[in-house]
Amino acid sequence: FETITNLLTFGIPTIFLVSIVAWLLSLRRIVPTNVVHIVQQNKKTVSYGVGQDAGNTYYEFPKWVPVFGVDMRELPVSNFDITLESYPAYDLDRVPFHVDIKAFFHIKDTNTAAAKVEDIDELREQLTDIVRGVVRSILAKSNLEEIMSERTKYADQFTLAVKEDLKSWGVESVKS
Image (cartoon, rainbow, N blue to C red; front, side, top):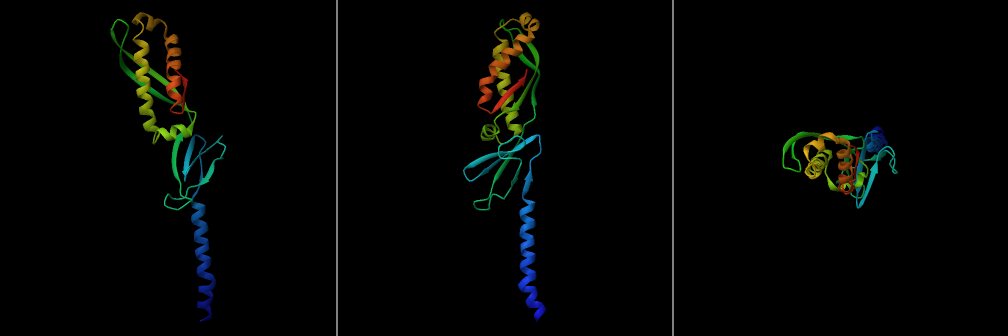
């Protein structure tokens, strides 16, 4: 009878306490160096990762836990590209041609980007549409010979044209 009393008094609470501590430790997240985790808790949004003010570790409590529950989104902070292969375009004289475009970007403001899109795939889709529109508008202002001979000029024009659009997405151009 004494053994059962000791087990109920000390054993079960100890097992319960160890289980709670193990569960809490399993919620700890260490953010890899090439991504940022945007964590929303209550009405506050915080970015975790290398170089972020909040550090690179946090506890990811399930959303259903009152007060402590979080919603997390992961976005890369490394450079990524948008590629348009054989994209149909027109010059000033409406001469059709195909162009290959590769634009490089990185996420500058992770909180702004996370507020606009669900994940990196959705961000890529939005940026692809922006790139298509800018390419069409820039190339339609010159003739084909000029476009072919002065590619660097058009790369600079592209970078300037997308700069303002990208700010509202939390992204900036790295190279065109």
